[in-house]
Image (cartoon, rainbow, N blue to C red; front, side, top):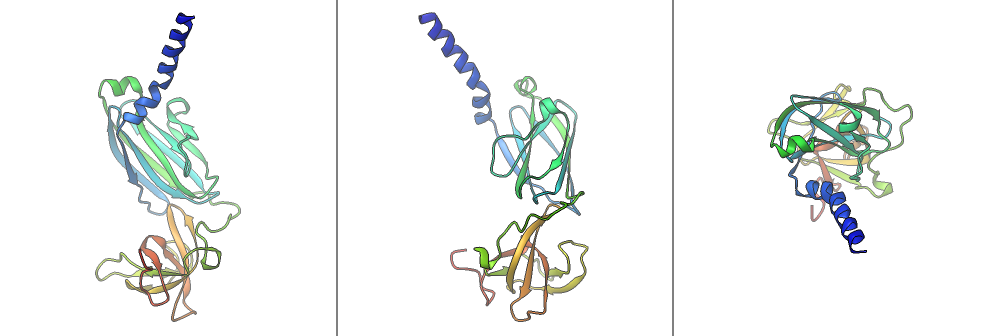
Length: 234
């Protein structure tokens, strides 16, 4: 009986070793910057460290991620709000290709295999991410609710550099026709937002000029009110 209990305990400890190794590893997070739905990231991982490359994708958008590495480094894909990988590179290869089942932030976690990590190996890699090259056949709705559905009623333009302005475009794309431009502090009515090709776009209407309606990059918005001031506590 004692031998059985001892064997069970040893097996239990070995089963937990991967979890302990992961818990003790150094995980850094980097948000991916896209240009027209594409991004190329060059980096490196050493030992048990890993890097989370975080990027947004809209429901139904295509996602393709490929890694090229000097050593045995791989990546796993995690969906929004989950630690359960939908793709495990060490067993499934160097390329993930699929469709985003839901909107939100996806994570490509780059790491080394355990035998290389133990040696303290450093692996240089190039990670290529393409989002929305194949658009959803049917839009599943906004990723951020409009004012009537619980989202903020108004945005305030913020984070624009000196001498620059936020472009209002006819379509949710940096190539969309320019309608107008806004300075920091401008109040914009929220008409709903969605993720498209690695960026969050928000449909807005200028508070004082209802005829000015279009799309702006959501990166430069924060919750505000009709006067353009930021909401209290933000």
